[in-house]
Length: 322
Image 1 (tube, helix red, strand yellow):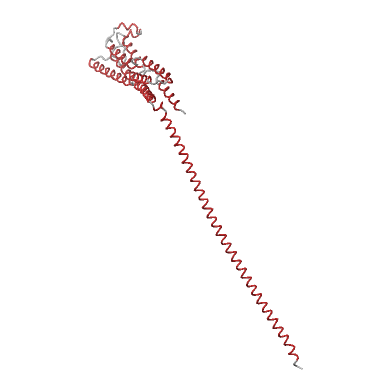
Image 2: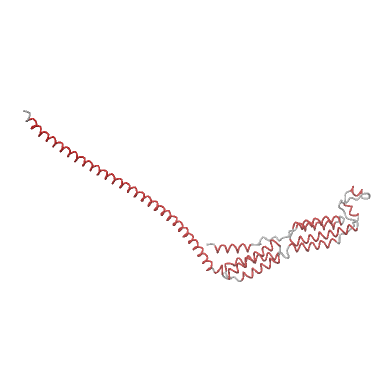
């Protein structure tokens, strides 16, 4: 009775084994499939990482290229600025060259006429300086005469007014005569020569014009300035020598055109006059003449001086202006 039970259990055992085998196979296949998927995912992940790394490298390369391009642009801009500056410099040099060529082609400036105008301007300037600074009338007249002769050699009618102005200025120079210093020197010589005629003593008849109290006291007291006439012969000789020294100083100041020194020498001369000679009409006349000498100007008053030079300079500047 026990034999049928094992017989029925064997198919179930085989069926269980079969199911186990199938499950094992299914599990193995699933595991393999899952591993292959994991491997594929890992490969995809590695590929994405590689692509990302390559993309970052490309971005870095692009950034480097961009920086290099920016640097090249900056270098190009700097080069353009340098070229622009050089072009401006070339333009300026070209303008200077054109101006130089124009000046070289300008016959009025670099020809014989320009040389004569330069000579005329130089002579006029010298004449003006000799008269204004040194008071040399003769030297100024010679310089103006040379300028007039040079100006006559210029045929341009535009300088006709300049010739007329020069003629007027030369006429004004001639009208000054020998000049104030020569005239004052002659007057000083006349003044010195008249000093010898001054009286050394005066009569008391001249006291009639003095006040009554002075006439009443004249027998007892004679009122004279404290710096009255030197009486002693030795003192008078020394005073006359001092007077001659002051005359020499006045002449020297007159020769060099020193108005202040000339006036001071004349004032010292006046002091010696009242000490060497007593008061008299002749002495007062000499003192008035001496005062007039001190007030006279040493330099000529000539409003026309330099007018021709200024007109010539204005004409030349006007012709050279663009």
